[in-house]
Length: 536
Image 1 (cartoon, rainbow, N blue to C red):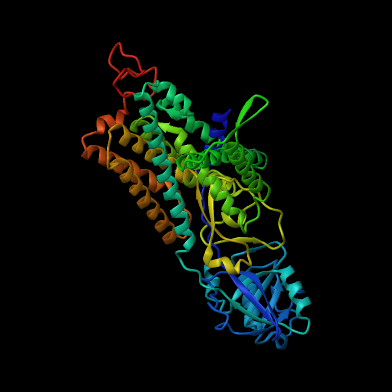
Image 2 (image 1 turned 90 degrees about the vertical axis):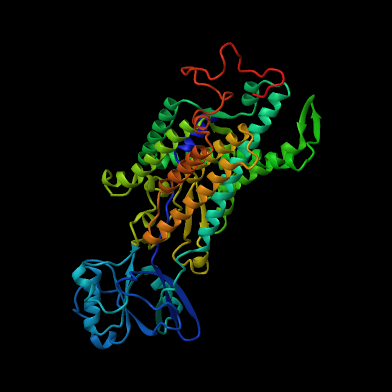
């Protein structure tokens, strides 16, 4: 059952996206008080002032009784030199703006009852519009009329956000620390297993007792990736049902993983177990309390998972624990398996991100649609085009398989909704499995400097930096495996070749679990158990 849970979660963790928005702020006042609202504009078409002080103030005229597709019924004297609000519909944004200009308006706001989308027009229309143009929520206009019944003064401005938001540094830190700790933990477990084996314990039993699972057959890797593809397609067609199953599995798996991580930390610092006996059964007080804490954290996340303001902290905590436990318990037996698995997952990532948009009706990739949910249209639009609901919407369930960190530069002005930098668990786990293998290989070769582990970690850092650099330059989210897999695989191969250990690095070690279809690496007539005076 635990293996099934792992497969289901791993099938959906390779999902990540980056939100790029063009929100701005509408500042409405009456001289003594003010209120600010979310608006959406196209900064490349009608740019706005970067600060409130630099924004020109105009009287705001409510003409939502008209769609302003033509000037019929509108008195130019009423709108000349003023900001104008009209309703959305019937004609293009550019046509409304041209009519507003003709009437002498200085700014055009289009009220919407549906969604706020980035204004756009035909190429021939862009040069004709000379006034600022933006969309606002109709309900915000009605609220402003109630707050300022005697007249409204409007200013539009778009605070510039730094290209490199601090949230990216937090995401980078979380991913690098998780991969490094997970790889180190895997190597430490392997060292403990070998030491136990040397002291007289059976190597195969030690492996089984640790609860680790090993991928050692290329055929099993192919089947594993094929099942992941099938799971992703099922999520695409049956998202509204399967998302709740994934959430429930994540709560169980992450609570168990958090328990394992914290229990290992307490063991490391020497915290007493303090066992008690109840009804002839012995219980560890530490384990009971720790289990209660971990289950409580998972339950709190499950109940408040749609609360953006703070729940991301618990999601990241549970996510780090899940990834660490995964890297500790899942091992790849040799570099050949690493190459096969990582290469297949790279193709999987690229296909479902870049190829599937040509196969779907709405032109959105299957992976992005599954990662963000079918209702998250605002985040699925391409490039700098966005959509924001004009009315309050019920929370949209999303898969909990990403690290989420709010964009700190926009923290104080989240009028249009909080913006997050996101990294999928798959971008941590997939290269992390190779890092873990390098860490175990350092143990097998008694490398005091941990050359394979350190070099692979450095390659992961460089790959992540390149991923973020391409994302910032292109303005679009990137499939991180496209950069991480080549960086880590090539670096590990180069290190093995330079040290003259490629044969051993490729084939693994003699004490790894062997595929029964392959020729055994142990000498003929030897068992796989330890003999006295020899390590496994």
